[in-house]
Image 1 (cartoon, rainbow, N blue to C red):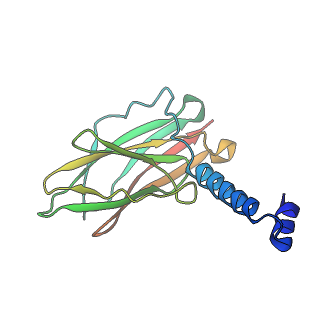
Image 2 (cartoon, rainbow, N blue to C red; image 1 turned 90 degrees about the vertical axis):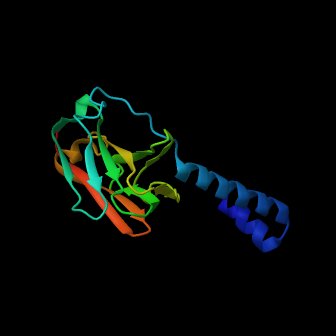
Image 3 (cartoon, helix red, strand yellow; image 1 turned 120 degrees about the horizontal axis):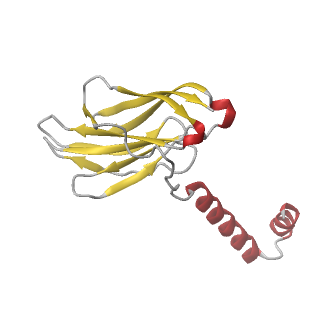
Length: 179
Protein backbone atom coordinates (compact mmCIF):
# COMPACT_ATOMS: atom_id res chain seq x y z
CA UNK A 1 0.00 0.00 0.00
CA UNK A 2 2.90 2.36 0.74
CA UNK A 3 4.30 1.72 -2.75
CA UNK A 4 0.89 2.55 -4.21
CA UNK A 5 0.63 5.72 -2.14
CA UNK A 6 4.20 6.78 -2.99
CA UNK A 7 3.56 6.12 -6.69
CA UNK A 8 0.39 8.20 -6.63
CA UNK A 9 2.01 11.05 -4.72
CA UNK A 10 5.10 11.24 -6.92
CA UNK A 11 3.54 10.48 -10.26
CA UNK A 12 0.32 12.43 -9.59
CA UNK A 13 -1.61 9.78 -11.52
CA UNK A 14 -4.69 9.78 -9.32
CA UNK A 15 -4.92 12.55 -6.70
CA UNK A 16 -8.51 11.60 -5.86
CA UNK A 17 -7.36 8.10 -4.83
CA UNK A 18 -4.74 9.62 -2.53
CA UNK A 19 -7.34 11.84 -0.87
CA UNK A 20 -9.70 8.88 -0.40
CA UNK A 21 -6.91 6.72 1.09
CA UNK A 22 -5.87 9.47 3.51
CA UNK A 23 -9.48 10.06 4.62
CA UNK A 24 -10.06 6.33 5.12
CA UNK A 25 -6.80 5.98 7.10
CA UNK A 26 -7.61 8.94 9.38
CA UNK A 27 -11.18 7.68 9.92
CA UNK A 28 -9.95 4.19 10.78
CA UNK A 29 -7.40 5.62 13.24
CA UNK A 30 -10.04 7.77 14.98
CA UNK A 31 -12.49 4.88 15.24
CA UNK A 32 -9.87 2.48 16.58
CA UNK A 33 -8.41 4.96 19.08
CA UNK A 34 -11.87 5.64 20.44
CA UNK A 35 -12.60 2.01 21.23
CA UNK A 36 -15.90 0.81 22.49
CA UNK A 37 -17.24 1.12 25.98
CA UNK A 38 -16.02 -1.97 27.76
CA UNK A 39 -18.63 -4.25 29.19
CA UNK A 40 -18.52 -4.41 32.93
CA UNK A 41 -18.78 -7.95 34.20
CA UNK A 42 -17.51 -10.01 37.05
CA UNK A 43 -18.66 -11.45 40.32
CA UNK A 44 -17.40 -8.60 42.52
CA UNK A 45 -18.82 -5.71 40.54
CA UNK A 46 -21.32 -4.38 43.05
CA UNK A 47 -19.65 -1.38 44.65
CA UNK A 48 -18.22 -2.44 47.98
CA UNK A 49 -19.75 -0.93 51.12
CA UNK A 50 -21.05 2.63 51.28
CA UNK A 51 -19.73 5.42 49.10
CA UNK A 52 -16.82 7.57 50.25
CA UNK A 53 -17.56 11.28 50.28
CA UNK A 54 -14.82 13.52 48.95
CA UNK A 55 -14.79 17.27 49.15
CA UNK A 56 -12.81 19.41 46.75
CA UNK A 57 -9.77 20.93 48.37
CA UNK A 58 -9.41 18.29 51.07
CA UNK A 59 -6.86 15.48 51.17
CA UNK A 60 -7.69 12.92 48.50
CA UNK A 61 -8.50 9.59 50.08
CA UNK A 62 -7.51 6.13 48.94
CA UNK A 63 -9.80 3.19 49.18
CA UNK A 64 -8.19 -0.18 49.95
CA UNK A 65 -9.85 -3.05 48.06
CA UNK A 66 -7.71 -5.45 50.09
CA UNK A 67 -6.95 -8.75 48.34
CA UNK A 68 -8.46 -8.96 44.85
CA UNK A 69 -8.30 -12.17 42.81
CA UNK A 70 -7.70 -11.94 39.06
CA UNK A 71 -10.05 -14.89 38.52
CA UNK A 72 -13.01 -13.30 40.30
CA UNK A 73 -13.30 -10.40 37.88
CA UNK A 74 -13.63 -6.65 38.16
CA UNK A 75 -14.32 -4.76 41.37
CA UNK A 76 -15.97 -1.36 41.77
CA UNK A 77 -16.13 1.43 44.30
CA UNK A 78 -18.33 4.53 44.40
CA UNK A 79 -16.83 7.85 45.45
CA UNK A 80 -19.24 10.70 46.20
CA UNK A 81 -17.71 14.01 45.20
CA UNK A 82 -19.27 16.95 47.00
CA UNK A 83 -18.93 20.63 46.24
CA UNK A 84 -18.79 22.24 49.68
CA UNK A 85 -17.82 25.65 48.27
CA UNK A 86 -20.09 28.61 47.58
CA UNK A 87 -19.60 28.54 43.79
CA UNK A 88 -19.99 25.95 41.03
CA UNK A 89 -17.04 23.71 40.17
CA UNK A 90 -16.50 22.86 36.51
CA UNK A 91 -15.07 19.41 35.82
CA UNK A 92 -13.42 19.66 32.41
CA UNK A 93 -11.93 16.17 32.06
CA UNK A 94 -11.75 12.86 33.89
CA UNK A 95 -9.04 10.25 33.39
CA UNK A 96 -7.36 7.34 35.14
CA UNK A 97 -3.72 6.50 35.77
CA UNK A 98 -3.87 3.05 34.15
CA UNK A 99 -5.72 1.18 31.45
CA UNK A 100 -6.90 -1.33 34.08
CA UNK A 101 -9.06 1.36 35.70
CA UNK A 102 -12.14 3.23 34.44
CA UNK A 103 -14.25 5.94 36.01
CA UNK A 104 -17.84 6.82 35.19
CA UNK A 105 -19.38 10.02 36.53
CA UNK A 106 -23.01 9.74 37.63
CA UNK A 107 -24.65 13.14 37.92
CA UNK A 108 -27.42 14.10 40.35
CA UNK A 109 -29.94 14.29 37.46
CA UNK A 110 -29.32 10.62 36.54
CA UNK A 111 -27.10 11.39 33.54
CA UNK A 112 -23.80 9.51 33.23
CA UNK A 113 -20.54 10.57 31.61
CA UNK A 114 -17.92 8.02 30.64
CA UNK A 115 -16.42 5.57 31.20
CA UNK A 116 -13.13 7.43 31.20
CA UNK A 117 -9.78 5.71 31.03
CA UNK A 118 -6.09 6.35 30.70
CA UNK A 119 -4.81 9.04 28.32
CA UNK A 120 -3.06 7.41 25.40
CA UNK A 121 -5.63 4.61 25.27
CA UNK A 122 -8.21 6.67 23.46
CA UNK A 123 -9.33 10.26 23.30
CA UNK A 124 -9.82 12.12 26.58
CA UNK A 125 -12.88 14.21 25.78
CA UNK A 126 -13.86 17.46 27.45
CA UNK A 127 -16.92 16.76 29.59
CA UNK A 128 -17.60 20.20 31.12
CA UNK A 129 -19.82 19.11 34.01
CA UNK A 130 -20.78 21.69 36.62
CA UNK A 131 -21.28 20.72 40.24
CA UNK A 132 -23.35 23.49 41.84
CA UNK A 133 -22.60 24.57 45.42
CA UNK A 134 -23.76 22.06 48.05
CA UNK A 135 -24.37 19.38 45.42
CA UNK A 136 -22.52 16.18 44.58
CA UNK A 137 -21.92 13.55 41.93
CA UNK A 138 -20.79 9.94 42.16
CA UNK A 139 -17.68 8.56 40.48
CA UNK A 140 -17.90 4.80 40.00
CA UNK A 141 -14.37 3.46 39.72
CA UNK A 142 -13.95 -0.02 38.20
CA UNK A 143 -10.68 -1.95 38.49
CA UNK A 144 -9.87 -5.00 36.36
CA UNK A 145 -7.22 -7.02 38.23
CA UNK A 146 -6.67 -9.27 35.20
CA UNK A 147 -5.86 -6.42 32.78
CA UNK A 148 -2.09 -6.81 33.14
CA UNK A 149 -2.08 -10.60 33.19
CA UNK A 150 0.37 -12.46 35.46
CA UNK A 151 2.70 -9.44 35.51
CA UNK A 152 0.01 -7.50 37.40
CA UNK A 153 0.16 -9.62 40.57
CA UNK A 154 1.12 -7.75 43.73
CA UNK A 155 0.41 -4.34 45.22
CA UNK A 156 -1.23 -1.78 42.96
CA UNK A 157 -2.10 1.85 43.45
CA UNK A 158 -4.28 3.64 40.89
CA UNK A 159 -5.62 7.18 40.60
CA UNK A 160 -8.55 9.00 39.09
CA UNK A 161 -7.85 12.57 38.08
CA UNK A 162 -10.51 15.22 37.65
CA UNK A 163 -9.31 18.31 35.81
CA UNK A 164 -11.39 21.22 37.12
CA UNK A 165 -11.48 24.98 36.68
CA UNK A 166 -9.78 25.17 40.09
CA UNK A 167 -6.98 22.71 39.34
CA UNK A 168 -6.58 18.94 39.47
CA UNK A 169 -8.29 16.71 42.00
CA UNK A 170 -6.94 13.18 42.49
CA UNK A 171 -8.36 10.22 44.42
CA UNK A 172 -7.88 6.49 44.06
CA UNK A 173 -7.42 3.05 45.48
CA UNK A 174 -4.96 0.35 46.41
CA UNK A 175 -5.25 -3.44 46.11
CA UNK A 176 -3.24 -6.61 46.54
CA UNK A 177 -3.79 -8.59 43.30
CA UNK A 178 -3.58 -12.38 43.51
CA UNK A 179 -3.94 -15.02 40.76
